Image 1 (cartoon, rainbow, N blue to C red):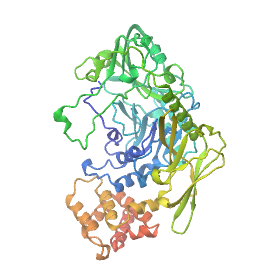
Image 2: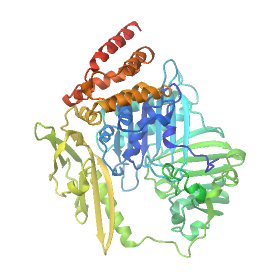
Image 3: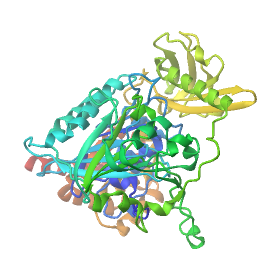
Image 4: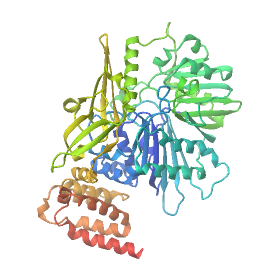
Amino acid sequence: MLNPDNRELYLSALKPPEEYEFEAGVAATYSLDLLTLLLAPVSFALSEFQNESEINLDLTTILESLRRTADKMAVFCQSGRIQIPKADNLLYSYLERAVVEVMPPDPQKGVFHPKFWLLRFASPGKPPVYRLICLSRNLTFDQSWDTILVMDGEVAQHRKKGYSVNRPLADLVSYLPALAVNETASHVSGVLETITGDLPRVRFEPPSSFSAYSFRPVGIPGYRRMKIEENDRLLVISPFLSDRALVSLANTSKKGEAVLVSSPDSLDTLQRGTLDKFSRIYAFEDLPVEPEEENEHPETEERPRGLHTKLILAEYGGNTKLWTGSANATDPVFTKPGNIEFMVELEGRRKDTGINCLLGEEDSLLKLLRPHVPPAEPEEQEPVSRRLEQQLEEARRALAGAGLQLRAYPLDKDDNFALVLTRSNSRDLSVLADIKARCWPISLSKDTRAQNIPVDAGAEVSFAALSLESITSFMAFELIAEEENQKEVVRFVLNLPLSGLPENRHDHVLYKIISNRGSFIRYLLLLLSEGESSQPDLYWALMEEGGSKKASEGPPALPLFEELVRAVSRHPEKIDRIARLIDDLRQTEKGREALPEGFNEIWEPIIAARKKVEGNG
């Protein structure tokens, strides 16, 4: 159990079961990296490729996955905790409607902190399948050691006795829209209604070592705090700690046998009286890199670093309960509830899932731990630095709740726009008075286009001469606080309400990615190859056709026509996807120019054949 050599890749856990397709999904995370989220739909939509190594994650691949899935998912994250991308990507616009920023009822007392995916997969003639992925990590590229729990379950035709175990999860999902800072996109309510409607008929299968599961949301109506019952022995693993919460946890152990695992920095901040409550204390340290391992795939493989796992394990006689998920051993979870969290409780037998199984074997988590020696005095953060951080966090919360919104205005006939930032309320932003505050659309360069954020209500910030595809609802912010020659900086993105956009914005994004004959042919190759075994002859024929020949040399060569004909009879859904692509390209003049000359000569009979097949079906 928790063998450090048994690693699960995040994106692999998102892949549908064999013969199933992604239909709907909801996710929750504290912080969010847009590039990480951009890759998630690839796992949802393109899992039919038999050889994953053949999928080239270029823009066309990600574009196709987004076109299939973006309006089928909703991702809820703490407002002000979207990371600024290192580089702009045209496809971020497809995520704007899916990302929902939220705040807990009292932002001063806690944060939105759950981390999970809940996915619905469907297959013709089979019951839908749900997958719950409960995580200790955020939706980012963080390389820490984390835990991931994956449970699948079929949707029964009728609600059965015992399925009420899913009620807390359904309550959490239903509550999410009430936390939204801004109005949610139209598809979000439909996604959530589908999922919460199915949950009473789903029975998830717990991992093989466990016999039962329960869901433990924290911080929502009816589920206010995390509580651990009195036990024989207790293990707490948490990267972040607070004295009061740890004392309350240690006191649940009747025999005084409590084990604590955390990072050295967090352990060094604890009071000696807190540490005395635990019979064993371990500091986490990364596995050393062996010399021969250092040069193995250095460009493709990153080793995990640091501890981000949150886990509590309690023994009750011959049984155990294990809680895994988002909750740290801190006050906003256990003693002064304020955070919104999500944990899964698993029940098992001590001989299979007890503390000795986790820490007592050669290949267990113990290989990453060392006994902790506390410092003479707890380490305290420098007061000026702490004061600046608090000032910046207040400013971040103030901006998130300031009613900021965007409007796009056309400037000329060449599709140039101005993007104007305004406020819809007069909430006090005086907290920004002593802070350097700048903002810019993530599609623009900070160095050349960032502007100061005005404090006064009614003031506007305008960014002019943006192309249509550069308009975005993702606005980057940089806040800088300085005192006594010390400086603290926070940078983040807010997903703001955006109005004034023409309906065909995504058609312009589509053209930017499929802007010539070669990229169009590569897109067709992607759609035609899905679900097939490796076809090197077809690949090279199409790549040569798309890259070496000019559009004026005539229609595409025969291999493409043959593959289209085969798709009509064997995989007509591929023709439907290609038809959607072509229809969208035809919406703009530049998009029509991307279609190879003579393509209609082979496409019209293909689409006619597809309609005939559909009519006979």
